[in-house]
Image 1 (cartoon, helix red, strand yellow):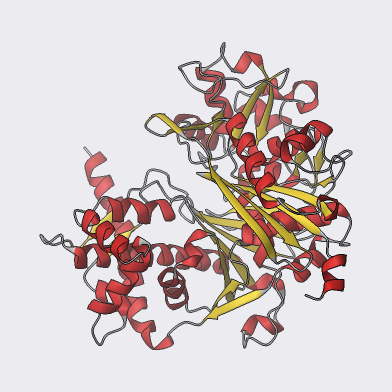
Image 2 (cartoon, helix red, strand yellow; image 1 turned 90 degrees about the vertical axis):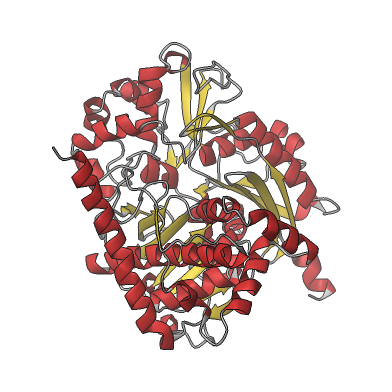
Length: 551
């Protein structure tokens, strides 16, 4: 960049709150990351399937990382701020003070995390109502959505939490409120996790039918009655108090937020693909599937008209890209599953020691070890006798069955490093087969998909990327900036600043293709066979369950 261009550049701060850390980036008008910082956040698991965080701890981490990325910067050239976060539930009282979401009465822990499955009983009752709003979540509501969690709080923490509550925020909306003092909610959060309709608003009959009629009072003031599209500017921008805490100038534009996966979709799906030999170059943006893969994976496909896909969330209007309907498939644990399989293996201490001696990550070491033991065959063929069904935390899509469990078939008595590497490979392949399963469900319902756009932590793993290409038979596009979720958050800030006329314009200017990974079509027959086994695994699991629950 020349000195003149440097002078003219505007910058945006994107803040991303993930499951275990808060990350921030300073991004320029062309989508280039200029600075990056991250900070861990606390998590509590007081009992199985109960996962909690602290909104105060999260906000403090947001302040730490934002101050780090703007260090040494002329802050007057920072034009906008955008937030994304996991779809966790934040509970505050009428004075905006934290309330406990736990039996211990610890008000510091006032966030029910997205992956919390405490409300299994409540979601079962909600789904039995067959209410019409459920058709917009694939026919079956997930335990990870907000209505069952709210019902759990009402039924279990009536005195200490429910009766005192003044505000229930999705975490992305909590962050934008902290920054601006504006309680408006994002259309993304409310449509995707709270049953709000972009054209009809809240449905009183749903909340009354499920036993949450008290939320209808005062025009839904506790869960949001002012709703804005992602990227819209909020109030008068950054408040003086928030500006002090973040180290930014007061009054800069703050955008209406997005859920983290949706920010990743925004950061990749609109990239200019010309010159990369991709079939989607001559196709509409609806031919692209954004896969945001971190602790969990989300599969974002958009369409001009609503498409109803059984077991896949949506269609949600304007929840990610304005003017388009969004369908969202997902796998509840992916990064967490790989970690679970690798760290639980007997050879893990040996792997740690060898990776450390080589100054490699454990996954880089495993990938090189697989190359070593594969001999003349393609690496994927090492799992010819080892098969994994990956639903260790239930199935989000396309079966929408949280009772499903993980499965492994083909185990031997040996537990050496070779076995660990092959189990790791089989797990990565199972996640990719899960993506193929979701794609087939979306295409059967009317989507036409040709290209995958991957981002998130797992997209940095070349084995994970190649397996997704080989198993789906589709090319995989990786962004120039690996931190696509942060680019998505910065795109929101750029839109709020008025520097771009639309989200689509900001997406095309700030999303860049970095690398394209093509499938090895010569291996197709092998993966088709493994996919048949993959589908048999869940079929057999259901048969075993039927046998055990029979008379």
